[in-house]
Length: 268
Ligand SMILES: [Fe+2]
Image (cartoon, rainbow, N blue to C red):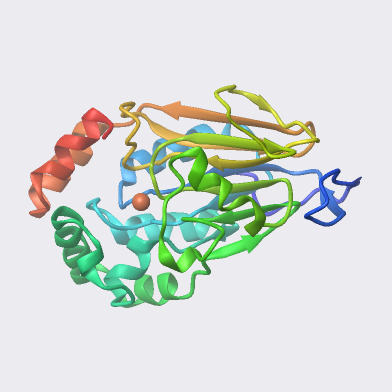
């Protein structure tokens, strides 16, 4: 995979909205993924597809582990392939950094199982991950740009409205809900966008949820990944099949709750 190779062409971009600054951006093609959740089969299928796009950089928005049966393997693969990896709540929880009463019983069970499985190396790595990052004219965060450590969700347009003043650049990419979504704003005109692929409008700003690799919850069981290309200002979400039966079998064999296996084929 072509990653970590930044093109050195610079484009000057003057944003028309007043609440963020003039910035220079590099011509880059990014693959953006989130919420792998220890699902190695989904991760490998997504990476195989991403390879065909010849991206410059792979970004991961967190929740590498939790729920799925291969937490250490997913940590190893993603730390090798991704240029930037953020922390999600399921990455911090097995390290004792979050109060487990916040989670539902299935999630809590999986977090305790994951904590027992994680190697010292994986724990050290997950502990080092940041919550939010400003990159090449855009921001990435697992949950919300406003107080990311509170692990709130952006599910409605109202949720998005509260967050548009909390990030730099034209776009903020998020994960966390496992449901792909795009909300856009121009002059207080907020809209949910369903266009895919999406041509980024230079007069608008966007919050984009890239969906989930390892546990989609939009009733589509196929793994999600996104491509963001600053060359032509396009964003596209893709879905890919993976061996769900194999992941389900591993979940059941490992003693994780059966519900976590069932939900994969339902996409919820
Ligand atoms: Fe997640």
